[in-house]
Amino acid sequence: MFTLLFGLLGFSIGIVSAAIYPSGCNYDSSSSMGLYTCDFASITLPLPYINFSNPEPQRLVIYDVTGDLSATQLVSGFSAFNYSAVNADYTNYLEIACKTGGSLQISSTMFTDMNYVNEFKMTGCNFTSGLPSSAFSTFVELDSLTIEGGIIASTQSDTFSGLNITKISGLPTPQGKLTIKNANVGSNFSVGFFDSLSDLSAVDISGCGLNAIDPNMFLYNNKIRRLNLANNNFTTISSSFLKNMTSLTEVNVDGISFDCSTCDNLWFLDHFSAFSMHIKGTFLCSGGERVYQYFGEKCRSKDNCNSIPGIAIGIDCFEWYQILNYCFTSASFALSWVAFVVVVIYRRDMYKNEKEIEIRKREKAIRVLEALKRGGGGGQKAPPKGNFSWAITEDGDGTEVKKAL
Image (cartoon, rainbow, N blue to C red):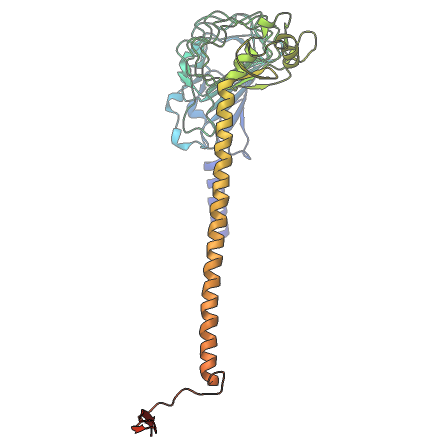
């Protein structure tokens, strides 16, 4: 009886704790990520929030997506998302994986009720009508937005209007990152495409086939620290391109063949050096030469310091005041070490002398005590303790003599 009761109870608990999801979706019970996957061809839009439970739909992937969804909502009721029931080890994640060979039309309507999402990713999507105005505004704020692969037929200056991409505190790894990677965007992004994203910390536009870089592309993005330009088709960078990117610390230029026909085209090398930026990737001229080597041999071979007193090392010039500063700093450091060593030696010797004096004192005291025990060198002992009587006599010459009795 008890066995049957406990069996029924366990069965009931299993039913209650099992993940619940709409038709066409699945949940990996071995995962602790709250990850649901849904087959676009098998689901009915919008996906109701109330049809997901145990756990919350914290991470949702919809695959084989295609068609015109510009007037369609993906989900409904997600404004009731229970933030307290999510796994804090992961972000609130949405991924749209498009169908190979298909096309996709989107609008802000598509993402209504999804402002709970922190990280949004679209892969393999062919945006044959481009990215429209305010396309992602209903997300309101994201920590990361990724568009990878596919085609972006066009962009608008206000595509990101209404959206803020920033590092969101409290997430496992805050990023503040926009990625448009390995997507065919034509020759360039539209003017002002990035302007509204003033809180970006990182941008990856690698492999987009860009033929040119707009000098004002990141004019209003002065918080960007990491920039990935790798594997694009442009060969020069305008001298004003980095003028407002005052926080930049890392640039990836791998796979770019720079036009080294004039030294002016390589102006950015001095800029990178002056601001101690980390350069990632193989830095090559279109002829195959290494950019740094070419610049050092062709552009700085005569006067690397441009008539300023100093010493040239590679492409860098150490001016006279920098050299003096290095010398003074090095001398101060060396003197500090000398003083430290002298103090250590002095203290060691002083301690040694103090110990030797103490030892000698002890040795003398021991010798005195031993001499007293032996009765002196001639065998004479110290006078015994007690009371003595004294008599005064007179010698033959009349001198008084004091004798003990």
